[in-house]
Image (tube, rainbow, N blue to C red; front, side, top):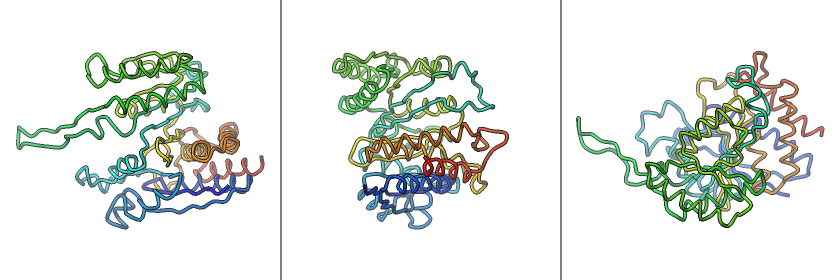
Length: 354
């Protein structure tokens, strides 16, 4: 089949890890006889520098013309001085809204235990969880927001809002995912103090009635943060809001050994957005030590969710497992590391030779 994909290499290590993911994708296409229709466009800080906008019009048009968008990373400290609405990170929020990707799926599987991991191996045994994060509502998008007043009276305002509709649709994504897994949803909120969380819990309870085979557990966010550390193997699907999901998924990344291992898929509309969880990491740009596995695993999610190519996605995942088994991992996971390119080469060869 024809795989039409818009590539946004982005900033920092984004282009480096995207290059390795594309290497693996080309191996997949060759092995299975697929045709690649791929175009790359500036986004984030690279968009600001080349076109004066974090989300140039040409990039916007390209994103709307294909079923899948593959993103490397966004952000550059050179633009940290800009007002919030002009910073490159704002482009990512606009993109998510534009394609109506209200559901962010972040799987965490403890496949490789780093020698520097703070966790005991027995704690990581059996860890296979999925964080389902609401992505286009909540504190990051609520209005009014901004600054007002002067001097000692200057104030900053952010608004936390959620509607029944927003909660209902993300809850159904979580329950549908649980039906294909271990049929257990842990819904995370702060209903003891937040009205939005009271509504969250009420709507999730209502949705749960349509999924009688799924066990529902409610958990306050502070306890959820502890459970991820103390008993992570007990978590199947963790369903939560934008802000809580942002924080908890970064915490959960340490279970996998490194943020560089974690993929994500942002779904909801007709266009899927796929990106590794890690940031742009400007301090390691060009050193050849960035971990490409999160990007490569995100590409596997793209094959599965946007193109329904389950066999191809599973082969890429097996390639990642092979790199772990061979000790072909980057500096965040080993004292005797391989380069970014070495890891990409290993996985691409595995796919080609399988």
